[in-house]
Amino acid sequence: MEASRDELARFFEVVLPHLNELQRRVVAGAMAEMLGRGGKSAVAEASGMSRNTVIKAEREVREGLEPTERQRAPGGGDIKAEDKQPGLLEALDELVHPETRGNPMSYMRWTSKSTGHLADELVRQGYKITDDTVGRILRSIGYSLQAPSKQKEGTAHPDRDAQFSYLNKEVGVFMKAGQPVISVDTKKKELVGEFSNGGGEWQPKGEPTRTKTHDFVDKELGRAVPYGVYDLANDEGWVSVGDTADTASFAVEAIRRWWCSMGQPRFPGATKLLITADAGGSNGYRVKLWKVELAKLAQEIGLEITVVHYPPGTSKWNRIEHRMFSFISMNWRGRPLVSYRTIVELISNTTTAKGLKIRAEEDLTYYETGTKFSAAELAAVPLRPHKFHGDWNYTIAE
Image (tube, rainbow, N blue to C red):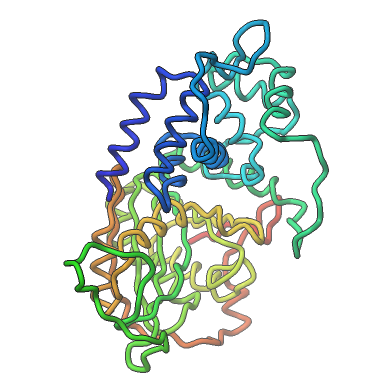
């Protein structure tokens, strides 16, 4: 499957620079239609086009396009900027797409949606464009200037974007200094046993893997709890697979195992560690046990530990979700997770064309929920809140 994605990416890499905007849409739409289910996402990923563009292109191809020698709509004047500069339309669409605002997937990527700021960002990327042209293109692809409409339950925290910016700044400072930066999170709990797993894999015709009809938890095997640690600088990860509960003690133990097995050899001269984590869960900013356990870890490994949390409601932006967990899910799709050993082996065998490496290990420790600790233990935590949102950003000295 990896080879086919690489081949698709290579195809677009070779072909797209030689095509105008209309031709690029035709090729992308035809390829998406040919691939069938999942084709639009595969083409978007391989070509670098936005998924919205590919969806529109596939619909145009399906409905039928008349051959034409035009590169643009009828009319006089110079060839449009988006036709003369391959990739411009996709780059602009990515900047104004609703999910782009506050997206830290590319660190230090922050752009206002005003046409002036959008033009400045596109010029920085190497395109020739003015703010007037940006406005014209946005209108042509269906965007309009509008205020947010409150149609979803819950609202974004007012400091959401500011926290993303702060997170990016901290990551940049640590990486520039050669200090380790990790993203941590708990992957979705998985049923262990002969249960169906989403997706499919190649099998002899008429001989599918047989699984249980109903997804009731096996009382003996239970659910696997994978807690992951992702090293942003080296594209490496660690996953501890537990079988009891997702607690702060379990989370910090996973970080400890990563450091002893992978982190310390990678960063022998490290004096600090930066952890980026979700706002909730076992590593949430309100979890006192998380901070108590981190204090123990800091003292044990001799590192000053800084934690920067993603703002509430933004867990989907956590780097580990996109750089590691998604590939693990793709690697074991269609395969029943019949045992903890199977889960560990499938995680360990997960790789990507860009070189992702993961180590996994079963954690057989029994972790009690509702662990009690004294007020003195909490008071003894050498915690230093940062000036900006000290609840989300703090440092624990060794």
